Structure formats: C-alpha cells, structure tokens
Image (cartoon, rainbow, N blue to C red; front, side, top):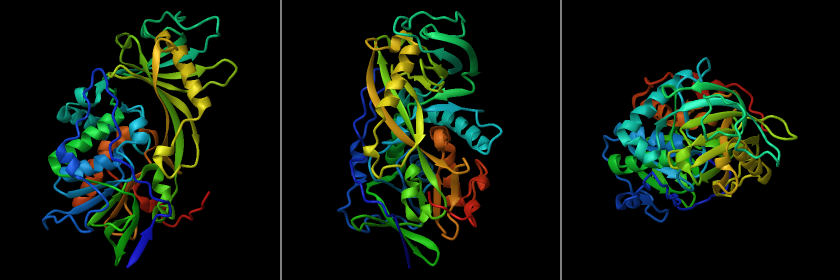
Length: 431
C-alpha cells in the first residue's frame, strides 16, 4: 500500500463564514439539513454507508471548482463528500470579480471550455434563480482610459463627453470602447454563487460536507481507495477529485508532477451612498496614476449595491492557511485612488469601504488548467490552475469532471488538452 502525504500543517475552521447583508440579495440560508451534513472530525472513521449502486467520490477543495464538481457529480447520482479545510469560498472563489465572458478566450486552449461554461452559467441561473440568489446578470463591458487628477482637480468633471461612458463615470476619461455586450458578458457574485450551488447540492442531492484538511491518499495496486484527514479520519472512496487551487503545490504528490503557483491579486469593495446611480457597466481600465506607470485595474458594479475594484497582482508564496491572506497596504491604497479617479460616487466620503482584501489565483507554467486523471493512479483526478477565469470556467469544469469520473469520458468539452499527462516526462524543477 502506498501512502501519499501533504507536507503542510493542518488548518481547521468553520465551514461558512458570516455572509454580509446586502440590500437587494437575500442571505444564503444554511438549513438544519445542511448543518447535519457538516461532519466533525470526531465522528466514527467509517460513517458513510452508501448503496453499492452509488459511486463514492470525495472532492477535496471548497472553492468554485470543487463545489461545481461536487454539484454535478451528485446530480448525476454519485455519493459525494466535499472536504474543505477552512470555509467554503473563503479564498479566490469568494474574493474574485465574478466576471463572465463568452468569447474572450477564443483562439486559446480554453476557448471551448469558456464557451461551454458561459452557456452553462446561463442555464444554472435559470435553475437556481441566479438574479435573486447570487446576482447573475448580463451587462455591458467597456474599455476606458482614466487619468488620475491632482488634488486641485477632483473627480466629478467628465472630460470625454462621449455618450458611451456611463454618467456615473465622471473622472478624466478618454477612448471609451465597448468590448462586451449583454449577449457576451455577464457577472455573478462569486461567493454567493459558490455557496448557493453547494447549498443546493447538499439539500437536493445529498452532498456531505466535511471540515478537515486532506493529509494523505491511500492507494492500493495503483488505485486510490480512501482519503485520510489529519486526526485520523478515513473516508473510503471509489474516486477522489483534487481541486486545491493555489494550494495544489502544498500537496506533495501533485507538486512532484507539476507546478501550480499563486498570483496574489488585490481588491476592494465599496458601498456608494447612491448605489442607484451606478449602472451595470463593467470597466476595464488603462489607469494612469500621477507619477507612476500605467496599470490595468477593473471595476465591477454589483446588483448588491456594491462596487468591486481589483488589480495590483504579483506572484508570492501562498500561505498554508487561507485565513492568513491580507492585502498589501500600498496596493489597497492604489485601488482606492483608482476608485475616486473613475467616479465621484466612489471617492472618500461618498462611498464606504466594505472590504480590503487579497486572494491567490492558481496559475500553471503553461497557462493552461490541469484537468483529468492523474497518470499512474486510477480513480484520482485533478482540477486546478484556472487562473483569473476560475469563476467563468467552474461550471463546465465541474460538469466535465463529473462525466469523466462516472462515465469515463467528458462530452461537454474535450479535456485532452488539459490532461495532467502532458507533464509526464518533463523534469520538475522546484523554484
């Protein structure tokens, strides 16, 4: 028997962190049934007796990829256990922009995945009442150049005069261009989307959620048979899906095959005094700060009445505990400068800062997600490395992995180009 271990220490916290109250979206309700499914580590080691006809699958990771995978596996009839070491959507899946684009990945390796997932997002919204449950909405996307004004020239005097620019964007702007329409771009609130999907999976399809960190995989004769959590709990399984995001590199088995690094991205969430003035236009900026180089931040108004602003990314070491991730003060300060340069509605005194945060995006060396069965280990699958497109590509990834695990091949999208087998034979150099 082979035992494959992670070298990082355990972090255990509660599953669901409190969700902020929003003016237009209801709180996600975690019912008594959900709570009964949140298993503690003190329960008996073999406490899941499932009918033989149901394939037992353990999904490790409570971000968008793991939750989508668990949802579609359970919907197709599998007996699914989701293992999360901290809290669901506590990292990038809760702190991302939630932007969806039909054709922005065209011409690249993820074109088919992105297109399938954009359409699947639309279907899920109809199924789960997305507009009310998690802020799904189509919107217009603009590219705009913004120049930071000096202290004597505060925002509030639009310089372009172009009717393409929404009225609330009243900073020093130029060169507006429509780069996405309501047919090709949309958004979700990523944390609410992830948790709504999981709540549905628990309530409707019987997914069990376990708090604890994956420590080992038990493998016999080349096939995975169980996962082991720190503290000794063993969860028997027919298949395991590892959707560990930027923490993939903390699990020794996968880190020995390929590298998944973490790109630290910063964001702030603002709450304007007059949210009704903010129209559903996403802004991709070329921002020219005073005394600095141009940068490319993004601005996402949400139907919750919030405005999300992100940018300022750099590759850093991923901490063991996602709860330890904090933003760099200089990066947060720059995003605030972006906000007040874009709109008088977003400057200090006109908008409350609800969150200053950072997260790590999982990136691969070749820029392509890693999705498929791990070479040499039957029943063990990996799904990670989606970079900034994780929220967009989560549904199609989950649906495809569910097909692969239960039926032997994916039909919703061809996964061959994403297979971890592409790294076989390459020398893994640690950096």
